[in-house]
Every structure is written in structure tokens, then in C-alpha cells.
Image 1: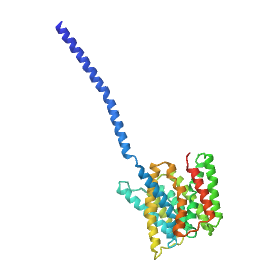
Image 2: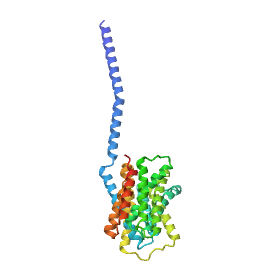
Image 3: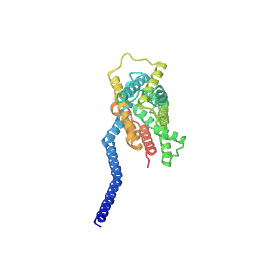
Image 4: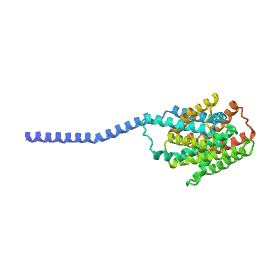
Length: 325
């Protein structure tokens, strides 16, 4: 009987040990899931962009891109428009590409250059190149206002891509084109060729933006190919490299390379990745206002009634189209 009691106690101990072991085995997966979840949360917290970085990037895009119109005007009054702008973009794109290679990016293949070339030519040779040609006779503020309708054109192109605009966007279309009509019909553009160029420039920029979404490529390659395209156009149009260049024009050109192309374009790319579309696109209705003020303050540009009315219409149009709610 004693032996039977001992055997029964041993059996109970064995069952309890197996139950405890099973409980531990069942608890281990829960602890593993919790630890992995905690590690993932910590990793996300470490990689989450700091708010001040987005604010700084937004401030850079607002201020620098607002000042580029006036800087372009300073350059083209002393240097050929297409050659100076093409050299600017080619140098900025090459520098960004070199920085990327130093950080571990692979060297671009020829197919990548061909993929980036159409968007680069439309964005920079078409959009910025026409602006550089136009501001030889047009004010930088009026040029900024004319180019502010690029989001309006982008929204129009979205119609052909199956997107249905809201009533607010339709109203934005009407206001935007009305603002351009007021600007071109008034005395802002004594040279009608400049008016045509500034009407086509945002069309090129918008179509290039749509093409980037269809054929995504590196920003550095877009800058580089667009700059090469502008250099080719400049040579075929008869432009020549100037033998001398004033100090103010050279300083403005350096400013455009470093700040206008490399810094501001990188800041905008950061906003596109880490901020909402509304915040990233806010430059479209902030830059024209600042550009008009900068042109009047530093360039002595005249701000007439047609510019004020056109600015109100264009800024309101872009606000209606970009705003989600």
C-alpha cells in the first residue's frame, strides 16, 4: 500500500510538472510576439521624422523657391538664359548623384537615364527654361504668378487619368485660368512672347510632374538630364558662353545651384515623403505672394492692380484645388 501511495504521488508530481512545462511552452510565443511588437514600435519611433525637420523643410521650400524667380532674373540679365540654367541643373544633378553614390547608391544604368530624361526635359528645360527666357523682359513677380497655375494644369490632366474633380476643384479651374487671363491681358507683360512662354511653362511643369508619377526615377537624374537638354537647346539657339560675368549675376547663379536646386529640391522631396500632400503642395500658393514682395522690395518691380487681382485669383484657385477638405 505504501508503495502504491508513493507511485500515486510520483504520478501526480509528474502530471503537475508536465502541466507547468506546457504552460511555459504556451507562454513563450506570447512573450516573443510582445517583444517583437515592442522592438517594432521602438524602431518606428526612432525612424519617425522629427516635427522640426518638416517645419525647416517647409520654410526652405517657401522662402528659397520664392526667391528663385528674382535670382533667375538677375542671372539672365547678364548671361544666356538657357546655357546658364542648363549648367545650373546639370551641376546640381551631378552633385546630388555624387552624394548618393558616396552614400551607397548604385551607379545609374543607361536605361535609368533614358527613363528620367522625358520628365527632366519637361520639368527643367520646358518649365524652368521658358521662365528663364521670359524674365528677361517680364518681372519676377508676374512670372511667379503665371507659373503658380501648374497645380491647376496638373488637376486638369488628372481628368484624362480617370480622376473626377469636385465642385471646389472646378471652381479652382475657373479662378486659376481667370487669373492668368487677367495677368496676360493687363500690362504685366509688355512683350507678348514672354506672356506665351509663361503660359506654356506651367503646362510643361505639370505634364512633367504627371510623367514622374508614371515613370518614377531619381531626382538627381531628372535634374541632370534636364540640364543637359537645356544646354543642347542653348547651343542650337545660338547662345554663347559669356567671357565676363558680373559679381551679382555669378552670386545669383551660385545661389540657384546650391539653394534653389540642391537644397530646396531635396527639402521638397523630404516633404513629399514625410508630410501630407496638402502641406507639400502649399508652396504653390505661398511662393507667388513672397515672390511679388521680394521683386518689389529688392528689384524695384512695379506691383499694379492687375498683378494684385491676378495674385488673389491664382492663390485662391490653387488653394481650392490642393486642399483636400
